[in-house]
Image (cartoon, rainbow, N blue to C red; front, side):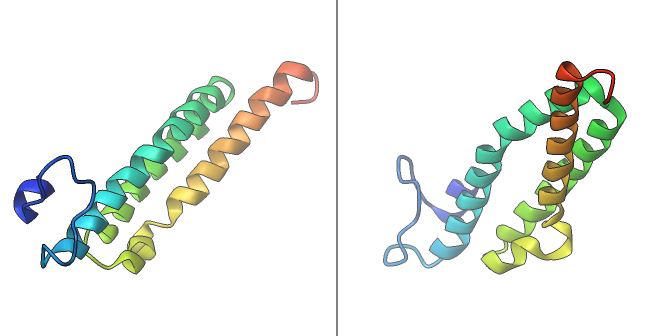
Length: 116
């Protein structure tokens, strides 16, 4: 939708500021989208593995991650990259950290079931 709105045809990944007056806004939208896609495999892997041992905890922080990612993208797509961490966008790091803890807990439980 952003490609149509800002007139940036494929296969160009980013808009050139010399050719498009809305290049900064489009580039922020594009980078926000790519950033979310880059984190997706890590998120799914930790959600799956951590959820095997701590399903409710992982589900809660999975939800926090999704909401925080939405806020992150909404702030980033405003055209001001600094606003991606405003209004709750920064909490996706906390959610990933907690999912990492669930994943480590599951791994430790596999090797030391009497302690974890």
